[in-house]
Length: 318
Image (tube, rainbow, N blue to C red; front, side):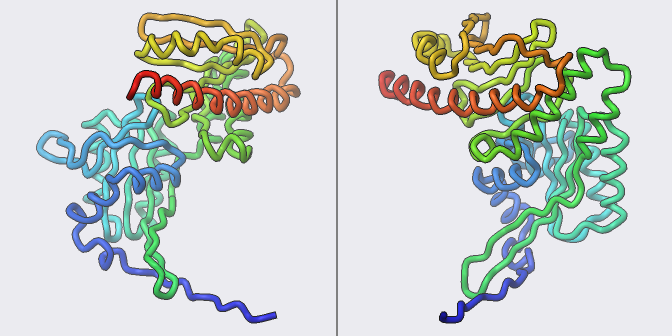
């Protein structure tokens, strides 16, 4: 058997790749595919809003939002070792922008600043999350250089969820626990996780799922009092497309094996597909079965919606 020739992985100084932080690195990071790579590292779907966005007399490098939600994200870049000046900046920018997520991208995180970010995550609620991310560049031989985002500090979602349970009603506690289990299962399900990403667990009866479309998104449902679970397709601000989806209701019902309940609100419309007799509050031992059905149904519904959306666009001549 011939010997396989292997290359050597070598680090590349980030300043060799991006000599100027604002003109080179921030501009590069703001590009859609690169911002998506940072988002993947932090498990957040990022969408650019602005660069050098004003905060009083200052400016944050990148102002973004989480796709499919109203969560605001500030990103501060530092192509050097972390320092107190930039630590102060991220707090100032977070306050000025009303940020829900703060991402500090650095060349190297010093231990004292790692601990500072850890402390901020431990002493803030789940409405604000801090990430400390090192940007690395690697090369194998003469191959193109490859960037890598290494998250060195992030929120401890499990600890936050446990803390959030204090003072919750039995119903809210069941909802939070269910969505924690759902998120864990979704991230480990290859069919689901390669095309969709679950949201952070919250004590509510729904959990949105971004599918990469501005026309619609999916939503998982866990109706505790009604003893049923479901999956929903939600269309925002496009009633014409909603009517098209309504026309496919019977087809979608047959696909999912669940009855569809259409709704038409002021700014949105959609169809909710329910599985009955699912006791989320009283039978936690059944959560695995419930969640498996939802994950499979979401994958099927997404595939069907892609076809419906493509046909709608073709007919409309978009």
